[in-house]
Length: 163
Ligand code: ZN
Image (cartoon, rainbow, N blue to C red):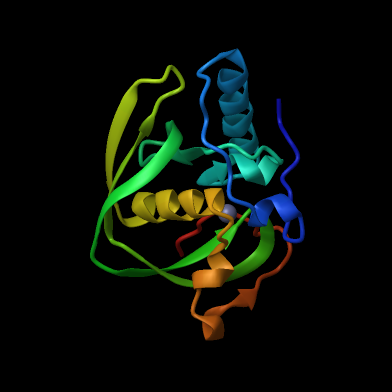
C-alpha cells in the first residue's frame, strides 16, 4: 500500500526513530509499503519516519534497481569525500550540494532479522547516508552547503538525486 510522505514541518521528521525489536509480519508489511511508496514517488530511498513511523527502517534502490531494505542500519566505516546534489521526498523541489563519504560500510538486519553487511560507493553510499540520517532526525538541508540550495520547478521532486 502506498503511504503518504510527510513533508518538512512534520515533527516526526526531526525525531530520533526507535530501534526495531520484533521481526514480525508488521515489519514485513511496513517494508513492502515503503518500497511501493519509494517507487511510486521515483525516490532512490525512503526512511520509515517519512511515512510517519518512528522506527529504524530504511529502503534504498540499488544500482540494479532492486530495493534493499535495512533494519536498524549503522554506518560502521566511511572513507573519502563526495560532493553531490541531493534532494528529499520530504522537501519537494529543494536541492543542494551535500558532502558525503565516497565509500561506506553499513551493517543492519534484513526483514527476517538476519544480519547483513553492505558496502557501497558513490550514489548508493550517498543514499544510505541520507536515509540513515533520517532515522536521527537529520535532513539533507542540515548538511548541504547553504549557498548551493535552490528551488527547482514543480514536478522534479526526488530522493537523493545526483545530476
Ligand atoms: Zn530524504
